[in-house]
Length: 238
Ligand code: HEC
Image (cartoon, rainbow, N blue to C red; front, top):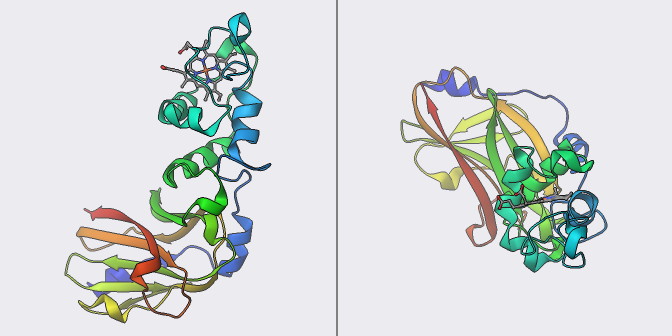
């Protein structure tokens, strides 16, 4: 059983900080701000039709109730808006306004995962772990935690009831049934990470795994549950 877990490999061998910098978002996953989603997604691709400032024929038949020029109006229809852009239905094909590019879509999805923060300063850190092919990938919207020192955690709960913790770049350690023995994967300031492949999950012994990625903003090597932000991914190895 050990063997399979040891096979979880880091697919990169460069330093963590380097890829954090390298994987920052092109567009901040928050509504407000010069580099935010209002300015770089809605203003560029939607507001010519979907703005409360635009009326009558200038709206090009965009419903009066669907606007993205204020945060409050946006939030009312944001889930539909994201699914429309993901399927390529908005902006309308005949409008001459381009569909969203990859940076815009990445920012929208991260913004959704973070619970649609209005401004970075008001948003708690939002870590996410999700599959991407055979590797598990993390992303992080740092929010108000941006630049704050933190313990970064990657831990796995295995089908045989043991916890393992991951230390960058390539180590998994069995700590038995007590998660209290975990050590951080990394220690350092929180940053925005759009997508970073961490390790390969092929070849695991079969069963159900739960893999967690979390950050806590007290950088002391301990799991500080009262300021821990995390997400998890359940993996069913065949
Ligand atoms: C050229 C004008 C135009 C632009 C630009 C445009 N839309 Fe639309 N939008 C429409 C029209 C017309 C409709 C109503 C007809 C329809 O649903 O296809 C609509 C409908 C919608 C709806 C409602 C769909 C539903 O099924 O209820 C959403 C959500 C939406 N648009 C989001 C967006 C987003 C997000 C953008 C920018 C990425 C955008 N639109 C850009 C014209 C536009």
